[in-house]
Length: 503
Image (tube, rainbow, N blue to C red):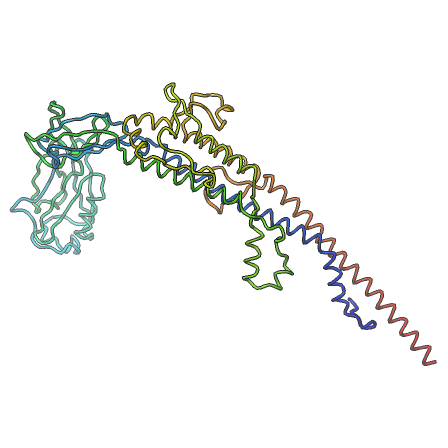
């Protein structure tokens, strides 16, 4: 029990509160330091997510040959019979193609006299038994033979609907498409693959499909003449010399010419998109490195927040969080290495190449290392004249095998994308050790590793805060004991004084 000013008339609780306020200053400083470190760690995490995303997603996509070594195919002559798409490994030049006939799929369909007439496909087979004319009951089955593939047995129940029968055929491994016209009651079953082969129905228990009057037409290969050579293809889509052909219509005697060349526009757009993403990362990191720091704005204590409005707290903390990564050594080093990687010569086939030669440079000093396409015509001309050289500048792999040497930001024969990937990998590894962030995950909700430098710093701070809280509790109890002793003594003296006066 605490005696609170009965004898002295003092507000003991308020006095203890004020005394503890002074004693709590070291604890507040520890909590503020902890909050500052947590804010720093979150800002590091945000930058790390941007770095990992740029390295793992954007840079990886730009490194793919389909983006940086794109080819295009142009059709002349008969432009309707054939369409073509060039893969990155397509051979530059031209090809001729004549489509004599298209590849067709094997088909089973109701004959002119076949079909069951207008039918409600939602009704069960049992309800339609008279119209379908099958015999037997319960489960019914039949076998579909599609080309050289093994026979497929289709089993249905007579309580299934007619629509369900068609759906079961389509979902089977027979690799066919079935269609039933409810107006005529005619059925067709078509192989999903084209080319020479037949389609048949056998072992039709109860003659379930008999009344549909199915007759078969075999599939045929496409007949084409490529560069003067007659040949066949099982499909109307096929690839030759890195060019994907799609046969659209038969045109005997009519020639289509396919011209394969560099897709300058796509490669140019890829480089332009890369520069945009590269500059975006630089801007995000530079923004934090050069953010103004307001030293007078420290994290607010809980008591300070009680005396402020929500908007005031928000504005205060905005300034308190500013500049926490100002001139950070890890990020500064990463940016420096990125600029070197981008602007240093790359040795391609014994010759030194660089972005300047392709019309790409850096902006003025206010751009802080951003890349700029200074001469679009020069870049397009370089792509047109020697696309392999452009690709090598960006994607060439170093011949260095030593794992330690390969971690260096600048290797003479390493392409720009690989250099940047190395620089960013070194940075995220450093952040992982310092902050506890992931070197691979781009999920902000992923937990931070506690065994990092900052994680250990926070753990030690938590221990100090716990010890300080316990010390404060003991200190507060000590103050109350002292005031209680004072109250007890004053009460005793008052009693003695009253006794003396009354005697």
